[in-house]
Image (cartoon, rainbow, N blue to C red; front, side, top):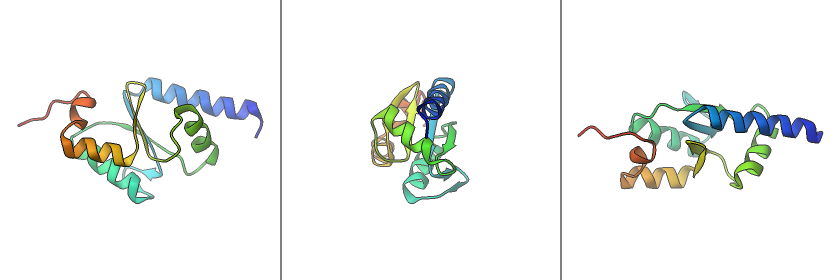
Length: 111
């Protein structure tokens, strides 16, 4: 891969993160997650009623490589909110279970 290709992909990733308040980089799609970690992360987001953009990292391995280089986070999925990396499956699941996920996403829970 030329450094130019990598920087183009990195710029596209950075733009996607900038353009979407909540974005999940995952294996597969929200309707058809391709791994259990992505499925659990999607389930937590859907459980709090979050609307989010999703990017499937599987079609192009360079997406995953550039994303991890950008975020300094080695695993997929990766959830970004307002341009900040929240974390992966374990962190999102813990935040959901503790009730911190909805507020972090700017959602107020309906009682």
